[in-house]
Length: 218
Length: 218
DNA sequence: CGGAATCCTCTTCGATACTG
DNA sequence: CAGTATCGAAGAGGATTCCG
Image (cartoon, rainbow over all chains, first blue to last red; front, side):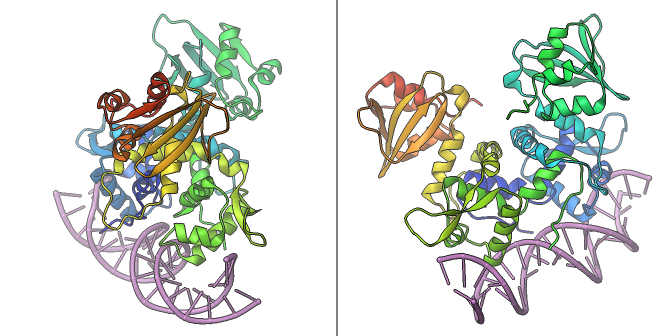
């Protein structure tokens, strides 16, 4: 079971030797959501064979990208989690997601989709460099979805719920519109000007928040 | 000739459908150096079959990442060049190279290496966010290699030679040491303090320049 | 029952030979 | 020089079986 290698003394080639094979970066995406069990990985990576998953897990563990971890809730069963080294792939995932947004188009007939993937994309499309003076708590409501978001020191985090006694800004509107803003297809100005978005709290904050994603001009 | 696809409605999966296959990102690296002819690509991607190269070139051209381009110097023969869309993969390459640096270690016995790869890595390891007040021209001399570098508005560029009538800062030292600074294995302070590096011109500028790469603490 | 190894088929890869 | 054709080897995908 010797790994295939490009055999080039080049940081790019060495990186691809480790994470460039089929499924690997999608596994990293799954584990960026949180620790996962073998079965969960298999279910969320349809098309991937069980033998391949087992082999990749072993390789990635040997490479120090993932480790076995307890899964909260279910006792007894061990799962897999990203190590710090694995987490450091975030800029790579971020780059690929930002580049891949333009390929999304309309969902194909047989395209799978999972809400967790959207959450990863949401985090990766948030641009820290645009998040000056946006610190605070936000609630995004779109259709039946509700997101609790904290921005602090140019970093975005998704929360299970808001802490007590904080001031939040609520942004509510059609999913397609909010989605378009986040994907950079519609400008935040345009969206807010359309009258389809309701704000509770500071309108200025809401505007700043929605401007933290790609601008359509780019 | 139907492309294999993950069939997931996710920007990451869509990006990997296009650039996630074997050799593809290495081809992008080659073309980031400059336009290349078929033969040159084949020579610089040892191990890649000629049939695969031809197939990938067609796919990437169909996807709008590359285009046929005239090669300067040799008339008659057409080559391949990155389109703007292809250039936009730079953050992905950058992320992978920064992540892959730690995997380099000592060159393996049968690892190939090409100076052009180092030049790409050099550009990708330069951190614009650290390049405040570094604008100017630099000459890097290490062993028999000489590099002409311009920094302007937080961007780095490699030049064939310095323009006339500019003030340059010359940094000269052992290749291994300069390399270690650029890879983030040695701090710029330590390198400059070792007495092994000679500076011609502004010592402050040289220091600022060498601090534009990864710091060892990270 | 969840976690993982085994088998078998099909696709892709890699190397060489060949053609316009 | 720029690709196409061919074929053995390796990898991927799916079902089933084994293990605890």
